Image (cartoon, rainbow, N blue to C red):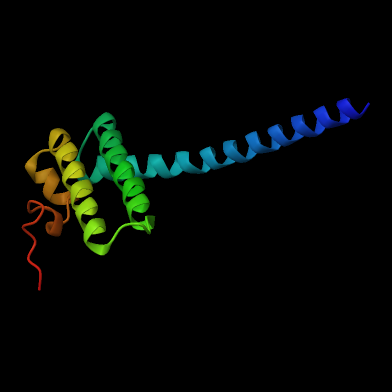
Length: 120
């Protein structure tokens, strides 16, 4: 009897966890579609390329959050990692986009090669 009750609680916990994950994924789907449509309209891309741009930007944001939250890094180390993330994001975008489209999506402060930004 105790085994059956224990199994029921395990099953109910897994079911609740699955529902929470499913609800979170459902919330992310409209946001991804919204981002894809934004890039599709702004950059005049087909849906496939717009999805690729959205994926590059999402990967960059995730990596940036990890670097920003890493308390073991010094300010200089953090800046170096961020410069590498920017360079990688821009490299991936250059494969997908034309120079005119790149100007629309890559901030002017990130267009210069890493290390070329003037420090005041």
